[in-house]
Amino acid sequence: MEKLRTNFEIEVKWRAFPLHPETPEEGLTLEALFAGRNMDIPSAMARMKKVANELDLPWGERKKTYNSRLAQELGKWAEAKGKGDQYHDAVFRAYFVDGKNIAKTDVLMGLVKGVRLPENEASEALQTRAFRTSVDSDWALVDEMGITSVPTFALDHRILVGAEPYEALEQFLLGNGVKRR
Image: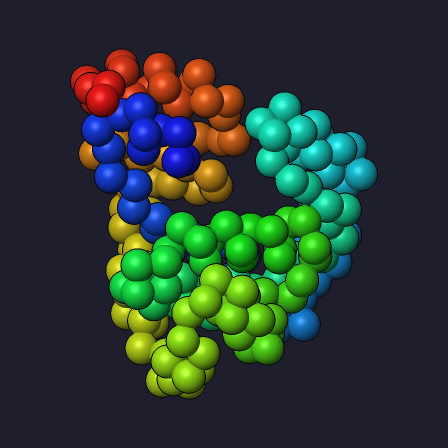
C-alpha cells in the first residue's frame, strides 16, 4: 500500500469487514470453521502461502481463525490517533504470521504497545467499545457494496477482489483515472 501511496494520488482508507463474526473468543480450528464445505484445508493454506510469498508478504502456518471484532474497533481508534497503518500491519503479522488470538485484549494491548500508542487510552477504547458504531458502519457499507471477501480494494464503488500483485493494483488505479504523482 505504501508504494501505491507514493506513486499515485490516492488516500487509503481501511474498512472493517465482518470476517466470520460468529467465531467465539477462543477461536475455531480451520477444520471446524470450514466443516461441511468439502474443502481441502492444507491445499488452500498452501495456495495462500504461495500467493503471500509471490507478493513478498510474511505468512505463517495458520491453524485457527479468531474473532477480529475488537481488533477492528481498536483499529478505528488507532486510525484516529494517526497510526492506523502501523496498527493494521501489526494485526496482520500477529494473526497471519504468528497465529495470535486477536480476540484477546492482552494480545491487542501488546500490539498497541508495539506501535507506541497510549495503552491507557487503548484500554479505555476497548472497555467502552468507543468505536463500535464506526465498525458497524463499515460492516453496513461493505454489505451494501456487495463485498464478500477480503482483501477487496474499492475505488468509489468499483472493486478489485483478492490478494493481487502490485501491477494489478496499479492497472486498477490507472484504469479508473487515478493520476500518478
